[in-house]
Length: 84
Image (tube, rainbow, N blue to C red; front, side):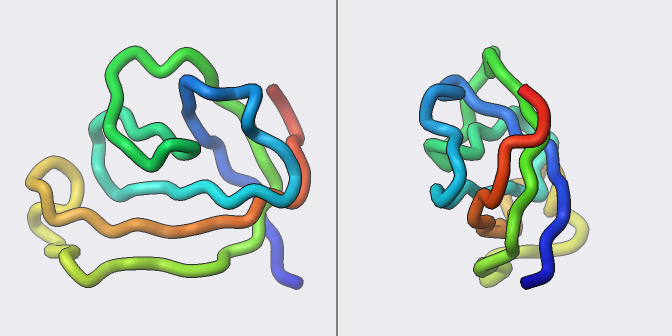
């Protein structure tokens, strides 16, 4: 199993636990890793150890991947919560 640590942001920290899946996005806009949605004023961030389980880059366009709507997504299974 190949794991790595990533920082995630969410308004639902109580749901972050080993075994759940979260996602990250190439967007520069605030993105809730738990609900997989764009949200302002994310209340929590944490470092988690994860395993990569999938991705969706079907709408990804390099020039618009940060703030133009053509985002890529990665999906992760949480192995351990490192830092809350």
